[in-house]
Image (cartoon, rainbow, N blue to C red; front, side):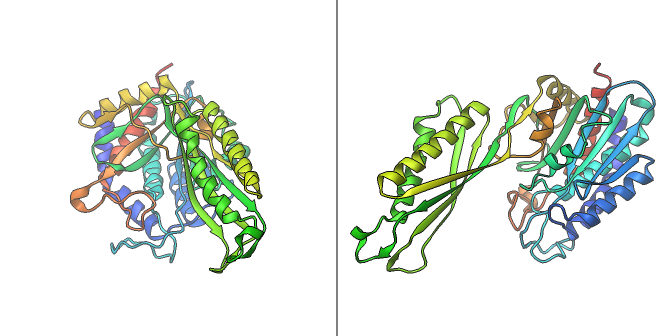
Length: 392
């Protein structure tokens, strides 16, 4: 473990250089052509068996030790966001309107660092390590697409690992827990159809704007009055649209929002109540509501055994770090699709540094990280793989 730590630290300058290069050249989901090229070139140079073009721009690579043992999948996402960067650093995005505002540039650099480190320590491994560099994590279904195209087969992983730099916490913090870590996400669209008319003669209309307001208010009763206080759920309305003139009651109104839950049972309850309330409130006001639900991703559920192994590995390779075993977030992540099929662990590594002004939240136009997190993440992930291959 000490050798892994020292080797990870020695990789720090290279990790920073790769991350900054990728940050300058961000690419949106399923468009990560340049990024995938950097990944494939590096992995091929390490002597790994590389497959490109999985789910359009995904890259899969296999590190084979030649010794019997488990297959460990390690996954890193690659896509950027449609955000105009406001940072003035010399590695700021050179692509207008596109930015690595969530840290996936760091994830790619970390993944390549893990590949380099484990290749150097190949003799100490057994089994094989399967690298999954995934496109389109940001709500576009990249993980599902890679699974459909066989990333979990030939060979099928025994365990799966992934991680996220986490600007909610400072460098020196790590969040590794078993059970539910991140929420499942659904988006919803409620179309309310009424009868439009003149704003001065509302009694001759069936006002969809008024129905919309009542529905938004009523939806908040689901969490407070239908979900058990011992469970967790979030319903948030993010967009409302209706009409264009100040004196015209429109024909239609629209509500867009998101639902976050940790369990299938609570999810089903919330979505059923959402549909019932929207349709019932609209009908009571002379309108009609049509609800469309889009399943974004299930919850991220960590396997207890794997999470404990990752916790142990992190404590050995970086004993000075603080491990938070109770961390949870209502944010979502499509690694959930992998963990639904393969026992594994997803974890967070603190990346903020308020003293350096590096504490803006994920998806903020001034998001940036303390790059100390890069080598630390490489050390933890590599140690976790090493522990897992010898856990059986």
